[in-house]
Length: 607
Image 1 (cartoon, one colour):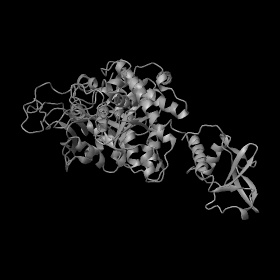
Image 2 (cartoon, rainbow, N blue to C red):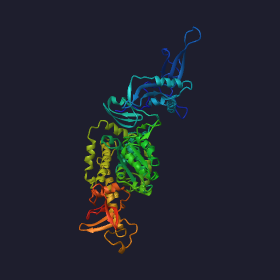
Image 3 (cartoon, rainbow, N blue to C red):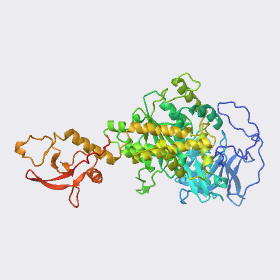
Image 4 (cartoon, helix red, strand yellow):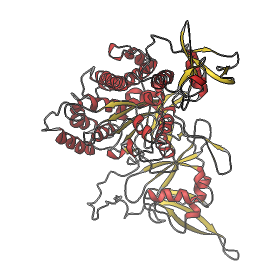
């Protein structure tokens, strides 16, 4: 089902028991290290890798050459130890035939066998970047052999070819779908050996593990039961792999509540699905930085603490970018367009304020589209963020207990979930639509319907993990938590107005506030009416009611084109010229262009 971790012990290793370590870092000593192995004399010149000591010296990659002596003597053989053992297992390239590389397998003196799919571009120049990565992973390189290592890698032509995935997440191949992680590929059958992760940074791996799936279920999963917000956050972290299978780009929730009420603990519990506490990040990053993080975590989860640390002027654009799944287009050094980052990601955020409040404080107008990309979920339960403390005395003790447990049990639930998903054949997009029709997700506005589908997807992730026997929760618990979150979100948002509704509300509110002070009768004699300061327009009455003749104000920050479009669709724009939404009138002897607006009486305008 899944490819062994790249740092697993090689099958070629001996099974002897290493001696007790004499220093904090235990060096794996091969039992045959002191007994050189007699190997066949190589044909020169050539490279050869020896996994054990030989008559040429310690284990490692060698260059066997020969020198032509002066005179008529026979060539003189020589042998150079280049580095600790390294082999080229396969050539690699991505699905488009680009990003060629080599799948390397190597054995540092300290630690187990490892693998790294190295991009060939690291061989440019003297190959310094390649050597730097190998040195970081423990490979020892001779100062006299670095040019030979470069030559060996450049000349290496393995028989095997595998696909190099340059991003984490789902990859659809002819033979099926595979989920690629930095040190592991999850797929069915032989497909697991046909694709590997390739990165210029060899040590890049956010998916740390500790404990086991069973220990996570026992020490964390069972404590989620009875705590809807814990179930919701774990389900959100699990929703990432479902995005590809349901044809979506993102699913995002934002936990809003007072300081020290357990929000951060909820995020750490969610982070334990994929890795340790460090899997949780903060909003204190640039939009470009978060794009890179999202791309590195594609099809899993991006967990961000404290939105108050983000720049309120940029956070709205960042939320849009995370939701759209595409980074900014940038130019390379030679001026050509580089491929932008791409991702699908479940976003889980927290903060003391809502996204809209944080943006407004920075002078930015929040949009409805941002509100449904990151749903504000209030964190106000019986004990801070919790309802059932199980065996703990209070919310603080429960939170501290969870923080301790996630450091010991993490990183297993997400991959175990994917192992079941690779063979999942149900129409999961249809399942989301079906669950979104449950009475608890009842909605009356389009944006509410979008939010219902997001939370139905999150609930489905939790229910599927429970069905697979991974969480230890009761069937229906995850969907109930999602419905509870939807209802809390809808109550806090007042239904979330669309931009169309916001424009109508802005115009209606402007008339209500300023109708008597900043407008006057268009037919009145200006010499016999009070002076209007800071005029916004005029009004006129007829058999249909009062029409306001605006000069373009009152849209509340929306641009004129978008604002007048909403007014026309709503039927509030009652007079216009053929090619414009405005009309030219003679008012007090002057020709003016105005917008003739008559709010529809009896229509409910959301406030």
